[in-house]
Image 1 (cartoon, rainbow, N blue to C red):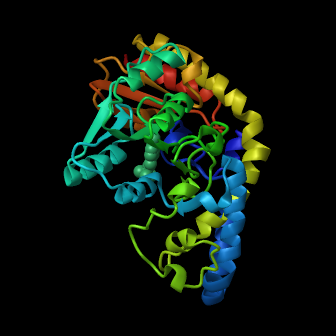
Image 2 (cartoon, protein in one colour):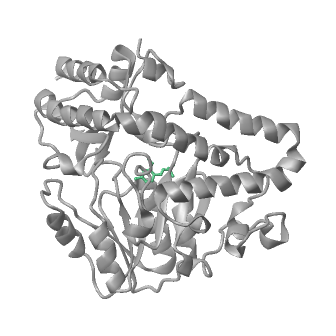
Amino acid sequence: MNQIKENFLIDSETIFLNHGSYGACPRPVFEEYQKWQRMLEIQPVRFQTETVYSALKDSRVALGEFVGCEEGELLFFQNPTTAISNVIYNLELKSEDEILMTDHEYGALVRAWNALGRRTGANIIQQNIPTNLVTEEDFINAFWKGVTEKTKVIFISQITSPTALIFPIKKIIKRAKEKGILTIVDGAHVPGQLDLKINDLGCDFYTGALHKWLCAPKGTSFLFVKKEHHSWMKPVIYSWGKNGDDPGPTEFLQDFQWQGTRDMSSFLTIPKAIEFYHECIKPLQEKCRQINLEAYSKFQVALGTSPLSEGAGWIGQMVSHPLPIDMPEDLKKILLDDHKIEIPIFEWKGLNLIRISIQIYNTKKDVESLMSALASLN
Ligand SMILES: Cc1ncc(COP(=O)(O)O)c(C=O)c1O
């Protein structure tokens, strides 16, 4: 019996190696979530017009401390794509302007940027970042080749979705700032996986999903907006804003926070998720990284393909690896149906990738089960 896994709601029979997609919520965090939902239902009017605002502030304060920024710079969104779409909506671009990103970005957000490109004529450039990079400088040089006098915005993942690489973005942000280029960071996989100090990074905008590695309930994400941009950031969808019940303190917050009758319970659960992280996840994180590093080398043996990164510095609790071309087309289904292994398999730039995630409920045995299942098919 895996006692840590017992603490999560996830099906105990499934070898769950896909924490990266939607996370998994631990029982105490989920109970806190339901506590808020019950409170809302017991007295909906008082809850939505009074209680919710001080509870939201508690969540912003706890999150600000956790991600390293002021609480007044944080907005809650259900997912990173919605958060970044709201930034995209506010950008005023001309047809000759350029938006620079890597070719490892998250597909839904690439779509959102391309839609902006079609609307404004701005060029969306996906800079090629080779997968055999060794040093931080290699990465910066490869990316910076894409910067021109027309670059207005840099959009970059701190941990990438398809390739699961940790990109060293701090120097990119510094250089961008010197050139007056706006920086927008996609940190969907970062909170709860890497230590995060947004103000130290110095970016203009940062989004993170809290339901992934922080294990908050689903639909819990945030957008950091540096103070100097508050005056021009407006919501895509207007609600009551300063004419509503939200006591503020800023018009910026009032404009975004209240969105009709949405259930904010998942946002109110953030302090509990942070508490769970400090007590239960953080002490075991190094062990997770070690298991992931082992998976990184075992993939090379089991699959015989070249890894996407050179060495440990590029990976945290996830690793993506190319599958050989002769793997069955329905590999994902075979792994789930015949081996009870839940793991994502997808195409990226002509490669067929498999991505493993290691959270505290995973064990070395899970990785071994995957490797022997793969070896039996190869
Ligand atoms: C790098 C990255 N960005 C953004 C997202 C946002 O996901 P959503 O579709 O929930 O907005 C994800 C989700 O997996 C991701 O991996």
